[in-house]
Length: 244
Image 1 (cartoon, rainbow, N blue to C red):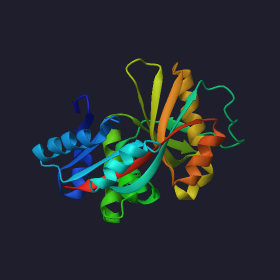
Image 2: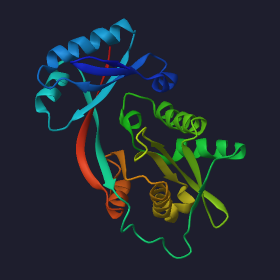
Image 3: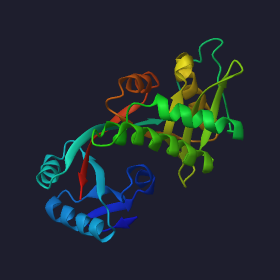
Image 4: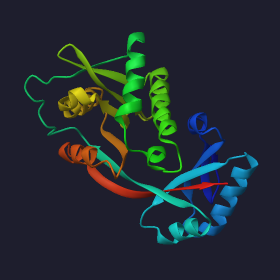
């Protein structure tokens, strides 16, 4: 990861694996002088042979968005950041709908990767119409595999069946969790809310005080689910992409 006073960026080998070209992401752009920030960002990208460059900015930063558009960046998606402090007053688990979370075993991996490839219809690469749908779906499957390798993903079981999964990471302070990715098998969609409840209850028991996440604003179903779980909607982010 590269940090400067004008921009922050990183290479994204997880995108490169499916795009077939070097890819990178900007995580921050100077709002006071976005033109200079973009110039320095692109100099970094060219030096690293990046061909696919993307990133998100605050949707309310009109000057930055205009600067990106003027430089040939295409608007591809909108995301929302959410948070919840504390875990009081969670919805009660519906009767007979208890979900248990466990670490995945070898026989789960193929099923999990298939679920990731077929069940997700939102996200930056999926919503970028210049990217082949097959490539964007493979990227999600690869992501799940990486989460398994990093031991950040748990399998969700209910009534003796595998119904979905949940992935999270705990920050170094030990008090904040990032909710990374959660999914339910379409055949067991009724367990979607219980999976989230089980994950939040587990975080509470582990002493976590706050959790945060980022979702596609196009994902109305998950947006409603997080509202039901009492999350606060923090910020809207506009996603852009340019081929260099």
